[in-house]
Length: 188
Image (cartoon, helix red, strand yellow):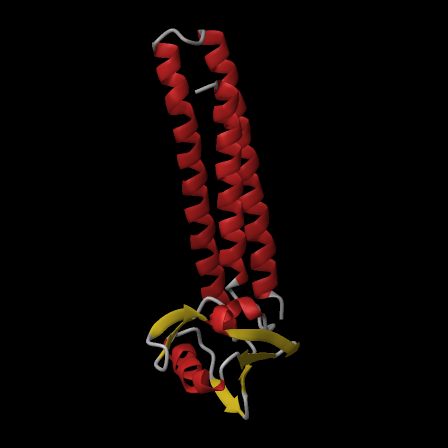
């Protein structure tokens, strides 16, 4: 594989790690209602005999800063959705009101905020490990090419430096994202 392609592939993979971390962070609520808090909840729909993500079987909105509203496409799934949210252990209590489900998002306690900061830190560390893995995956074919004398030592050092700079850029991006999320979580 061409060394330039290896660099592009490494950058693409690192972008995916950042996108995944962004999604993970969106599931941590800061006391404000967000559809992402429940959209991935898996719902077993008895009448269909299938399991689906909540966002696939309903419209999820936030009419105000403390409320999540779920409007299922099929009214018969209300009880299934309510049961799935309760069993998802996400600290939310759904209430069926007519043809919709409303969830009041409680204010976070100081202790819960600290727990969420730890969870965010764990998510960020997993992303860092993933970035390091992408760096390693990019360096392996270059080392093999150098060993097989397909690229010179100087070229190898140049590409190795570029991959390290890419790694450092993404590690810094993760640190900035974590700092921002911690700030959101600790703000009262």
